[in-house]
Amino acid sequence: MGVHLLKSPLITRIRQNHALEHATMHVLGRSSPSLGMVGHSDWNGFSLYGAVDTQTLQRAVGEALARLLANESHLAIHPRCGTNLAVVALLTGGAAYVVGRDSSRSPLRRLVTAVAATMAACLVARPLGLLLQRYVTTTGSLQGVHVETVRREVNGPLVVHRVSVRRDSEA
Image: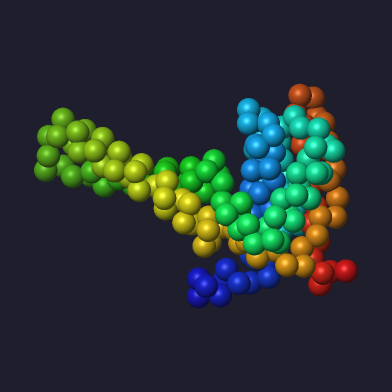
């Protein structure tokens, strides 16, 4: 059932947009390493939150798409993705919860064990998060994907760019 869900048209669109978001962040990060941005992908494209010039972003999105189409699928994986944070939170929280429920040990022993368990969970979380990105939350296959618009919105100090994406099947 899980594999079928990942191949559904809606989920595939989100995974493609997520990959394009990550690839765009990689391209932007190369020219502006200290640029602080946050992204969010959905079925129709993605939004980037942060102060970046619109023309710079348009060029970065174009380059990112071209590179993904040229089989640079490694760009779909980003080390600062929220998927990684979610995996860290689930594993460390789960480890601490399981250890904390063991009432047969003294509180000090549970604390020491919880620290060790959460540290082990942190070590496992990073590679697991990257694997989840590669096989679940993104896809490097973007054939037929085109950038439709890059629109800038400013709301006080918040700058948001909306990148709308379309597919050949929607033309």
